[in-house]
Length: 420
Image (cartoon, rainbow, N blue to C red):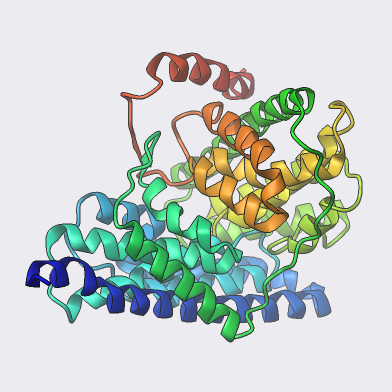
């Protein structure tokens, strides 16, 4: 056995296991703290009145001590494309406690964005102790991000693909797949051993493949893609508005918090605060209306756009699930099936990762959903436009050029409507 083989392959087995352990520990810690934050807010919902002050504190902490930690997942993707310097370790505590505080006091934000940052940042520290070539740091970052993604969603197969798919829109470049597989399954195992509070979503009987159902699922997928595009447009619009008119960073989430508290009081319930995992489970078992995803989208856009931390992933799962459910009013398919494909479909369009999101649906709802999940996720992806939730994703313009031009024009309709 040559030394070159050992250097190239066997060397990465312990490194990949270490990546998975670090990502699993980070994800487990995040999940336990978020579980506590959710339970505490449910017990003391009146602490939502402190949300503006918490927003000011988060903004002040990032401005004063955060430095380049504020780059988040966009900094991570930039480093994957062009590795220059190790991700700052301060990203881990900043995104961890920023996410916990946002959810504890009622902000509508997710957790996967935090998990990805933490997994990739901790994995990147390995390069400080082991000499790495330029391309090898990419493997650390991709494997760490994917392992954290799979660990937090209880979907290790999706974790293998996610890190490789997220970096370039329109192209899945399979590299380091063995390293990603080892890291993802190790992270998943660590979270399981820690008894991480994973959510067991309800399963249901999925009909066999039927062309009529597939056609309706494709129509729903188009709506999922346009919804993800509309959501991101509103979120970016709010973000740009806050940046334009409020120069002092901490004031942005402070004012955003005031707006959220006011709207929460108008809405009158606590259903749209925090992660919204209970709302996802409810959307898979009970009929819903279009007001549910619309309100969650509004609260999440304000939360993220004004500068709170946590990300959009779980709220988009909520939006997708309840939107799919509501579409059963006009699309003759069971609300459970539409909710399940919506669960993966909207986030597929927002993140531009249709393969990983299709696999997530299969791991959560069973392999029987595969054809419908794939149709919904890819239709959503095609109609979601070229701008996603990760701003530093690069676009592979060589693929589907004419189709993308047509679909981009169609996808701009929500934005044109808003501008009018």
